[in-house]
Length: 262
Image (cartoon, rainbow, N blue to C red):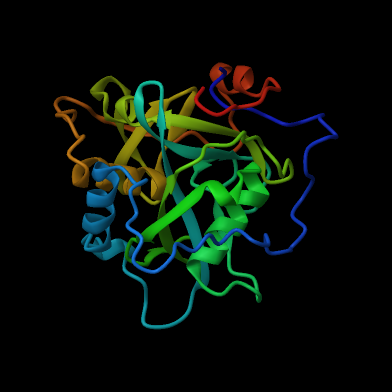
């Protein structure tokens, strides 16, 4: 498996966003039927995540900002829990080339953050929405330099499906990143953002995960009890300039698919 799987050049895969809401993705359980599919560790994380403290720099303003949502989709892989990430295409106006959670802006037919997050994940990764169990929301966060108000939606990948870069105009690749790799101190660094602030980052699967996505992953590692000591002696590194591509990222662009459980 390469670091990031690309769909470029495969005409059989879905093209750019159609703007249509995926129909039939909601799967309601009969009243009183207990949810036995969600792992205990994830149910506990969902409860703690809903009460997560919001850093002052990420608190939304009283008004304004563009409403959006992201899907934080946890699954169970060969090495334990993992999370689904995408790498955005170079050349985008915002967040060009950055790894991120699937997600995007609200559309008129979205009934709320859950609809938006699932719709965007389907459009960007081709994930089967019927295999997704929605668990709850993290507090709304604000990305100041782009003006997005973001609601992170936490979910369990109850029935994993094949995923790929379904929208090649916005997504360069898709990858399931094991939590164990995110928690490994060898993969954790500090980066200096373009605005001068310093934050956590991860070098995993040929990607540098930083900014908003890394901040959320860092908090989830803490809340989930996965964090290991990693800060000692680590100096902040500059974030690569937009559009710069490493050798690992070039290799990651080789076409392939990501299948369930791999």
